[in-house]
Length: 207
Image (cartoon, rainbow, N blue to C red; front, side, top):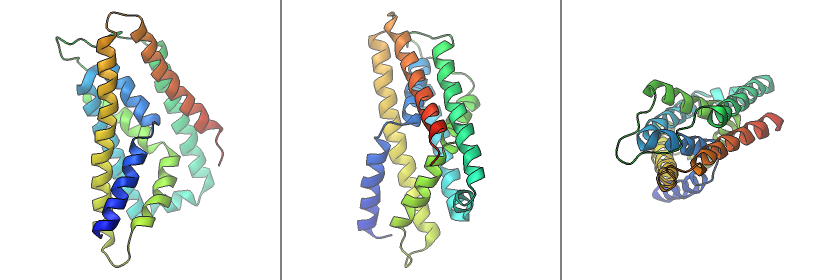
């Protein structure tokens, strides 16, 4: 991969990472409940999702899935329902209402957060199709394919992690500023509502 292509991919993915989507609102909701520790664990799950998607692309599985509309429909429905489920948990579940600054918030089992973040990623059919359409534009036939995919994967993981943790940090700061206020409860519900919105949008999108 040439330096020019590398920088172009870095700039393109940075813009994409900064665009709010289901992963961003999931991470912000996670941060308001469990602090930056929980957000870091969530970022690990998101990164594992990227590894799976890139690995599937390398094996041609993404293209295979894209050729079967039935499979993509199932993924779309499952992903939409899962986002709506997470959103409903944020809205109707027991909210913490604040992130304490004198102690480190104790998140639930690490595996549970990682799994939630992973499912947010891999059940998003738009991510699969986008990667399938986006990555080939930066692949050059005169360079080793696996090496190029590995470089793009590392860029994707690092840029996404920085962007998601930046959003999470903003959410934590907001939670600290609003601690003790019922506004924090509505902030968490707003994040949950955003996830439900994305779930409904994904469910109704038949493209």
